[in-house]
Image 1 (cartoon, rainbow, N blue to C red):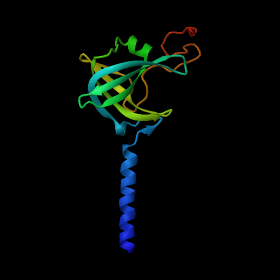
Image 2: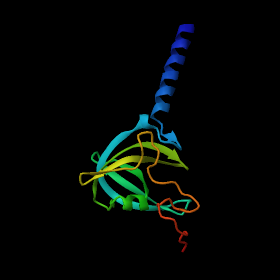
Image 3: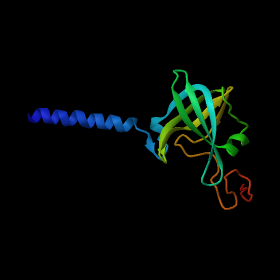
Image 4: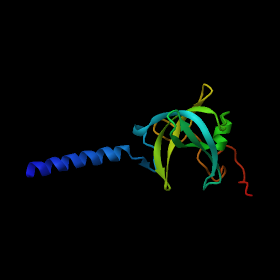
Length: 149
């Protein structure tokens, strides 16, 4: 009976470890969970950020037909790097699933389109775009007063 209980505990702890390894990281980029997703952009979504900037998200339909939510980065950073995204674009995204503010999505580290690659994050997940400051409220790299509508 004791051996069976010990074996059951061992099996349960292995399943718990396996389940936690597959779960998205909470609020931070986990390079160990990084994967590559190729497919067609189904939808491009602009998302208002708390700092006043606009983020770009994609709904990506992979080759297997699975829909993947992808968070790229600030629209200003993407545009300043001569990138744009439209529905029906073929892209390859390298990133990791992250759980943040009740939403689970792939935070892209790199995205490739038409043979060009945009590095959005460093290998450890640190964003490559500048952080917002008092002089640069949306992190676009140009000091200005925020535009409010």
